[in-house]
Image (cartoon, rainbow over all chains, first blue to last red):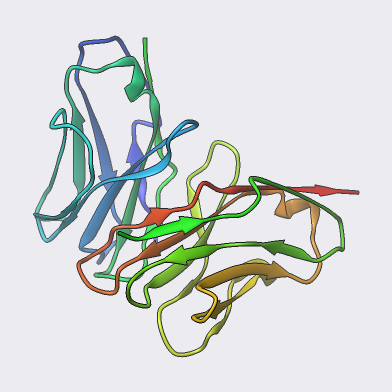
Length: 111
Length: 114
């Protein structure tokens, strides 16, 4: 099976812009989660979607949002970008609960 | 709330030596526990997981971990380190109910020396 794919792999934006990241889960997986990884804060959970519904949400401001489509593909959006949003954004997929498989990540740089 | 503590942000071992990476968790009920590895500029790769039953879990690349409820620990070991094991290792915990939400430790950077 193909693994989790994320596009784009690298992205450069300026402050105030918005960005959309995409994630295609492993075939058959209905759960998609997003994580932010930074040197200062480590790995932090953003949100999880299961069958197009947000099932869990982390402690991030409303500028961070996501959605999941009927084919389980997911997107996350960050509006009004700030310098501190520069990070590696990781997507993970799983069949339901207990195991998640991660994609390679999208490296976002905000200038 | 759940939490994970990884003792030692950097661990250095000689090639062929035992690898021991420590992880302690805090949870009101036995959680699911995971170890992931991250190589530079890559995502996270699942090494092994504890979800129920066997407390000694074997993973990929010769790694294993033992779930000890009394010590709230889930330490990762490998009998003989290889140069290719040099990477960052993350311990993570999630609740048994309520979907997928991983709480990660701060990571341990493993260095393998000749």
